[in-house]
Image (cartoon, rainbow, N blue to C red):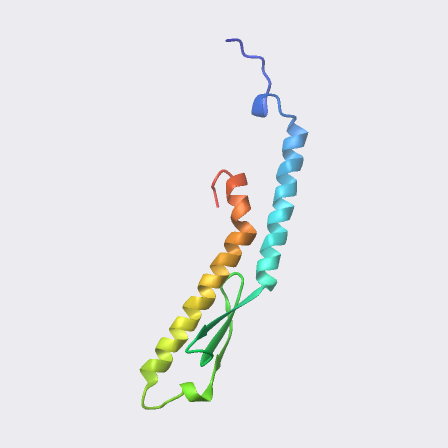
Length: 111
């Protein structure tokens, strides 16, 4: 079989490849910006504990319903806070996968 020197991708134009990479980078930056601006909410115990988190997983706020604060049962409040954080974290991860998942395939699985 003879080699025809087609270059990248069996003759793909290098400029087209660079433009495609640039476009993908711009889309990825936009998706990352959207994640930074997005917020997800995790809840536990009904709405006894509410955690607001960025799409990237940064905790923004924690709200406690007064009925969740029992000085004789601090462990329950700690558990509720953990459950709310895990709920928000799972939602942030899902959002991240929705926004960034398409880039993993386009980057050869490097993400």
